Length: 132
Image 1 (cartoon, rainbow, N blue to C red):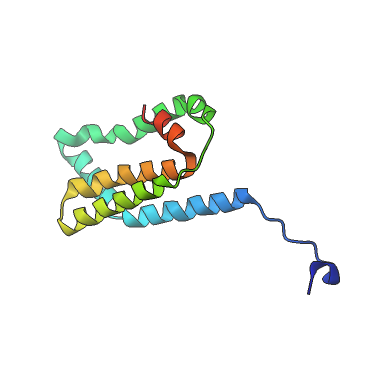
Image 2 (cartoon, rainbow, N blue to C red):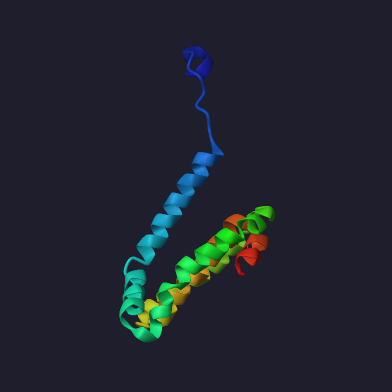
């Protein structure tokens, strides 16, 4: 039956809800992919003095991005499908790292995948602004 026949109001569709749902899904998939990589990396940072500087990198990068948020957000968001290629390349690097038991490849693939996600959703201009 149509909405006019039943008297029901049409369901409002919100792109905002869809994009937050996509962000949640994508975040969940990345968390699942790196379920044991990130804790292992954090353990090395915490226990090995030679790599202890790694503990500073994520909060420092987030702080610098926060300081530059006005400059980053001034660039208009322009979705770019080339980001999917970059993210797929990052997944390939992750798989190669898993198959070869190579920790560096699995860890660096996280940076590649995050860059691909930013490029896909925000575009090259914002990715360039975020690259410090």
